[in-house]
Image (cartoon, rainbow, N blue to C red):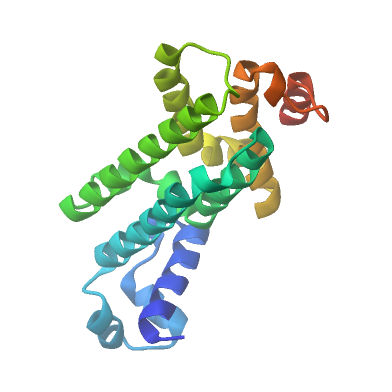
Length: 210
């Protein structure tokens, strides 16, 4: 792995485990066993590392948005895409645990985070609209933007909420909890032909509140 990629990987791991405020470029360099000067050759500071990680996530979401319509032809296809998005949120969880602080950290990071959130908002709206186009949603088109925004609000905050409730959950358990929470918000609006024969809305609620 190239040094630049290693810096990003180690920084992401440290940010996720210790929080952005508790990690400096010196700590990152020490963790990697390289000199601060070597790190500075690739990144001019912590803000640039954070900005690059935000851009990585944005690029991954772009790929999902380009693939979504071609791969989702049934509501059961919706689950894997939600799982992929929740897995990305978990992988870059330091961002969603520190959105307010990061948003005020530097103009560069603020711009990147705003662009990211707007991308997520568009993706949430487009995914819901596609379900409606397939005849899988039974709700007025005028209500769809509000539902999409509520899905995004939960997506942005579910990690903090879930870890406050159960701080020992594994990454897979966190992802599953996030997916089930989003599905439970969409399920009441599903048309009859889209509802699963394998679970009910109450099944989702029971698992979420256990």
